Image (tube, rainbow, N blue to C red; front, side, top):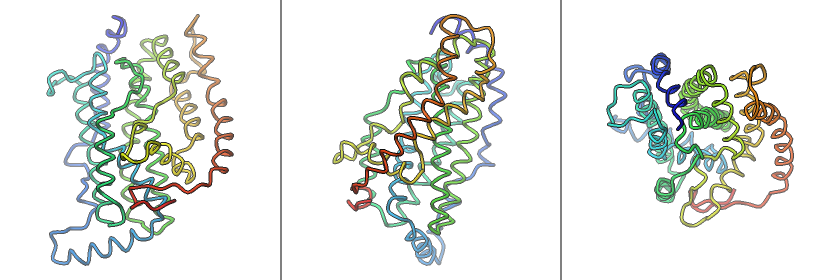
Length: 330
């Protein structure tokens, strides 16, 4: 990272301290146990039976998307490692008192509950092959992922701004499908996870908005670089050891259901352009001005590509088999 970027990141500590309010205290936070049957109660068998009856209403394709979302959340160690790879914001000792380190640990602590809750929910339904799912999680953690941020916090926070919004959209849409299927309890679960993602999205978006104030040229070039490489989904290297195209197949199911689609990708780009007010950004010259033109035209271009992708998906009617649901097809 060049010295100017390092100075910008160092100068933001007071601002980041102010953003810590977007993290909830442990005392005010929900915990997975709040949404799961109490197996220590005398009537625990009745609770599990009622829980499973509700879960029976979920179609297999919704289960597949829920499993894929859960596996993505369970790869949290990779994401914290990524945060600590960004120069100038890393938690060098593991207990650094800096606002950047406090954000990293606080964000991780909140995110950790997501995978725990969804994992336990799926286990208790009795409808999925937990060993196949656990194998996929282990493979994903071993494989890792590269968001093309190159240790640059500018690029890293553009990525997290995008990805937190994408995750919020996905969980919110699964909540909608759960409600439609008759499992209002799962709707609530996905809703509280989406609520966390919305707060995290706000913080990361604010980080980049502040960087645009301090270093508009550096910020817009980082945004351009990430968009030119396209945003890599954090679970794109998932595999269960059987299906080498597992992520692609999971993605097809998610798109068919409208959980996360190419249209959402285009809409997120447009949203970030509005949030960071790229249309009205003045004073850019040369490469930065060209990057501004490129980014401001990107949303409509991806919207057109999304229409083509939707037509292509309509032609993809072949059933897809998933080990996660005992090799049933969807």
